[in-house]
Each structure stands twice: as C-alpha cells, then as structure tokens.
Length: 421
Image (cartoon, rainbow, N blue to C red; front, side, top):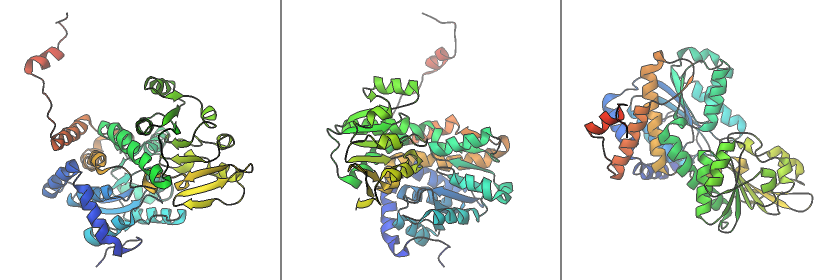
C-alpha cells in the first residue's frame, strides 16, 4: 500500500529514482553515514518532520535518516524548489510520505507543512524555519514532545536566533548552516555555481562583458560574485557591513550603494536574508532589459509588490521563469522565478558533492540532538567541532586526498609557552 502523500504524479517515480542514484554517486560521506546508521539504528522509533527542498540530494538524506530508524515525513521548504520526479520516487520506492508539488500555491504550501506537523515530530528538520515557525505559532500543543531540531540555511538561523533572543524558542536547534563544512563549501561553491546555472538556464544570456550586481557579500554572495567574475562578468558588490564591503574591495570587486549600481547593472542577484535589497527606487532607474534574480531563501529580498506598482498591466511570461514587467516609460525589467531561489526554481540546486557535506551535518546533527538534548537549553547551537572535522576528514578520504598529522614534538610545542625565538 502506498504511504500517504501529495505529489504531482507517481508515474514520474522511475526517472526520479535514476536521478537519486546519480546524485548518490557524488555523496560518499552521506553514504558512509547511511551504512553506519543501518547497523546502529540511532534514530530507531524517532518521528521526524522535515521541511526541505525536495531534490535528489535531499532524497539521499531522507534515505539515510530512514536507514537510521527514523519515521520520516518530508514536505517542501519552498513552493518552486520541488523536483516532482524525486517526490514521486520517495513515495513509491522508499515509502516515505512526501507533501510537495513544484509550483504549489501558498495555501497548499502551508497545508503541506501542517500535514508534516500532524506527524507529531520528536525532531524537526528545517530549511528556512517555516516548519518551526508554524509549530510555535499554530501547533503549540505539539511542542511538549519535540526533543529538538536542525536548521539548514542562513535565513532560518536568523529567524531562530530572533526567536531565542525573544524567549520564544521552546526547544534547542542546531544551526547546520553555521558548520564550517556547510557554509564554507555549500554556501560559497554550491550557491555560486547553482545560482549562475539558474540564471543562464532561465535566460540563456552570456555573462561575459555584462555588469552583474551582487547584493551582499556573505558566503553565498561571495560564491556568486566569484563565479560571475570567472565567466567574464564585470561584478559590482553592494553591502551594509563595512568589513564585508572591505573584503569585497580587496577581492577585486567594485563596491557601491545599490542606488548607484542600479542604472549600471545588466543582471542583479540578491542573497542576503533581508527584505527589499532591491526596492522600488532601484527599479525606477534600472536600464531597459535589466534581469533581476534572488538566491536568498525568501523572495522578499526583491520588492515585488513595488515592481508591480510601477508596471503597466500584468507581466508577460516571455520564457519559463522569466516575467517581463513593462514600466510606464517603456523600459522592461525581467524578474526570474517570481523572485524565489533561482538556483532551485530554474535549475536543480546545489551539486550533490557539496550537499554531501551539508546533509552529513543534518544526519549527524539529528543524531547528536537525540543524545544530547537534555544538556541543551532552548537556544541555537553550532554543531560540535569534532563532528565538523570528521565530515571534512571523510570528504578528503573520499576524494583520495591525504594530509599530514602533527608529530608528538609539534603537539608539545603548540601546548607550551616557554620556548620562544
């Protein structure tokens, strides 16, 4: 009997399974964790509700959690990020309840989150904190049995830390995003490549010679700026943090205010976690044909209602994921993927090799939360350094890379202060 689900078409399952297996080949760390989980079953009997992008990589995380004994339900963390064939395969081949359809409307999106919470989770797994937020706002009767949670992305960590600071967070959460093996690699190399991939797939524009404006210079934006520069773009960075702005300058990028970049840019990409990075007054001075995209978790980084207020009539869908807004003076501004994560909406998200480390953090973070929750307060924690280091070690081993180890004399030298010059 097929498990409960709400996916587009179970007939897509076979193709989804092939793609899940393709991704698995590039996820050796998670595969090793799954092999251990199958033997030890550390998550036996634990109910888990996961609100994540339903992709091939997420499917391999779900298989790992299931191998560890978890009773898992999966829902989408963004209306446009679901890969429908993957959702179908998880239901048909792995008997994991999935509630996710690419392009679902807002009401369906939240109905799916509610159905995931009906599972009465012991552990939550989030990407953007929508599941945890819904739990704290509207399903407080379930909080009593929640042991803890994990959070995947910058935006979610920001929301959870705000909840903790307000005393509103009712269980401990591990910020997977803050692990070195996550944000140094997934955010920089994964977001950098997949965002450019999404823009090119949606538009088929040549980046070489174009002016690309990158909103922010956090780890995700660093990756986007790096990859755009590598393809020959003339990159401008906008920032509010003087240290990050200085770093961008020292990395060779032009740095200026967004209002100064707006008339110059050909392509705009935001990835900051904040609202209205591109606002109405920026649209008013953009050149004809400007392309606007977002790679942050929520589409609030672009003031889409403001863009609509400036436009004459409804936008035209000129290509899949490209909406063209015509201004009163005849200019057109092209918005990609409704301002949602362009790398997941218009492309396939991060390559499996970087999600290997991110989802290794998720799996081990869930295991750690289960065994250490009694020691933790209702706060946001970074995953322990020894787990982070082990993931890096496993990744290097899988890549065939060997590194040195300290000699006893070197260890002794580093742990004393008497010996100087």
